[in-house]
Length: 328
Image (cartoon, rainbow, N blue to C red; front, side, top):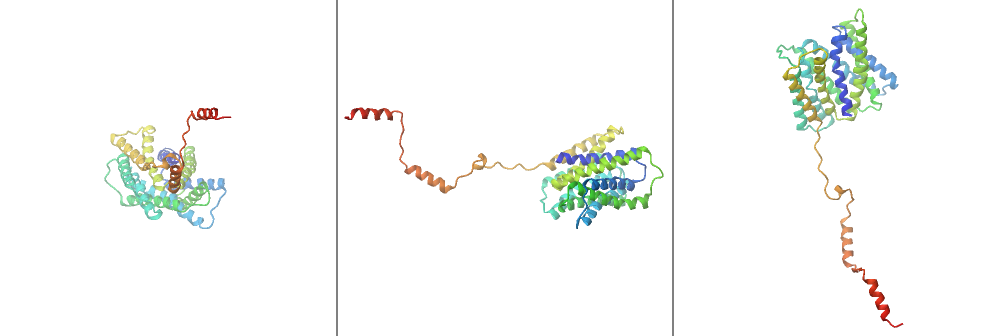
């Protein structure tokens, strides 16, 4: 389950490459709306399940947090901040989720999780930052808001267990998030005058692979796994994006980037470790049920009172000899 869930952030890492190479420029909200709304409607049509009762407004809340609000704030941060800063701020998400899990879900915050979260921030910073010092306050707030938005969405998605299938719930959230983004795209950006074949292919990839596949795996894993474990997998996003930039766009990797990638992977491994349980002692270790002490004591007392008869191989011969000696 953990391996399947990790496919989601790896797929999302290709968004940067597809956006820069295939999509029209300066249309981030439109890209988010097209990525979410058609994918959500497709999943609703396939599952043939609609929300019931409280799940109408819950789907709107979760879709706004995990999809609509997250996409909008993330794109604002990407446009106003230097390269990599938004990713470095987003690396705080595992720590935010871990703290929220303590408050909302009653989970215990361990030192292992804290160390892994700090390592994740350090590793992503080494991986993506390029030494820029001019930071835009609005961009930083937007990046932090995106991390908080999805963190709250993850915790609420874990707390609110849907009676429908995970695939249907994913469709509800994508549809709601797309409906939140669509007015922004139309008012702020407008529609492009024309679309090329590459544009259509890029949008189709983001909707089908990035959303239908990616979010279906993500929310499926979130339903079955602890939220902190799932959120740490998001650190794979900048790692895969950096590798793709090196392999496809011929970008150069520095020693610090390689070190940062190694630290991120170490934080992922540390986050998934679990303390080894002590081996059981006594009858539990052998798998045999323990006899009651009273039964053991009575059994031992009965054995002590029962006369012991020694059975030897010579006993039948002695009996035959006595029979021969007795008169007939």
